[in-house]
Length: 247
Image (cartoon, rainbow, N blue to C red; front, side, top):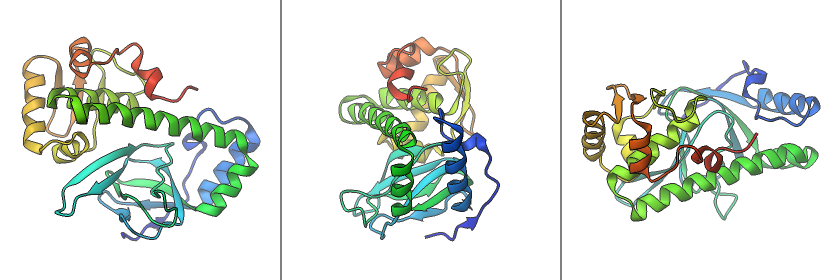
């Protein structure tokens, strides 16, 4: 596991929205500041099968939770952005069920699980807020699993672009909406269950057809949201309510 660097520059901007009250906000901010760390892109916070006694809270940056086959192939099962709580444990709370990796330089809080549970018990409205975020994450994962099992390569990538746009851009799904995906084409393929070659060809086809523009650095501009949403089989007007927790 990569060594984490203690980090103390946490502002109220990283607090989950909405925060029920000032007392909750102060208590949550103090907890995050006391347990904050920083790591570089590519750092592994925990490996699959490691002992797991902490929860993580993303302050800035992107984290990926992944599973691996015996021969080393990876499936990214979830991407966590600021405000998310990517818990690594599975049915056995003492073991990490996934690998957690930093896709970007990341600031995060690592909180001992028992301390976190005591905090939630003392602040039930904060607990309810994170329950809503967890429900939204399940909804997003359900949409991805549907396309992994029954969708075409184009529908998987189109849905991933819609999802990542909604998560990373406050403007939502709009024509000329611009957002950055801090992932390589290989990593996007690992998220969609496709090879990097397949991702590259599909993105080029979308670009050639005037649906998106995409740079080598994965800066994406949606040029035809109706076409992209049609391929993804989603309604851009109602998708945000199904994937993003209500304020």
